[in-house]
Image 1 (cartoon, rainbow, N blue to C red):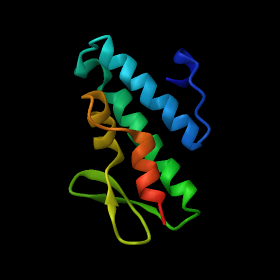
Image 2: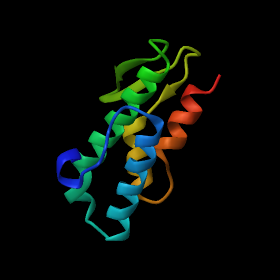
Image 3: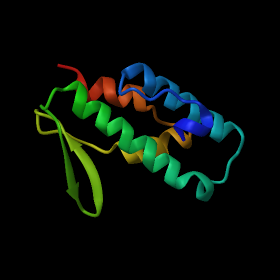
Length: 104
């Protein structure tokens, strides 16, 4: 995705803004969900890793119930893959998910 779309993914919160815009563009173009399902999973996994890195080890990946979650130090669970799907549906934001998950 990064190579084909020339999307700069550097694990910064700014890169999540760019990911949100890319997902919004796919939605606006009415791309069928089946065609972007794996891309959305990838964006969600990327957003989860941004959260883990921004918390400097205070958050961790967790596999539960067939899904992958990020657990922050306060015990909250975050589902970045689902947030990418919500973003594609017009109801979510990877950037805001990261902001909320990393807020003190």
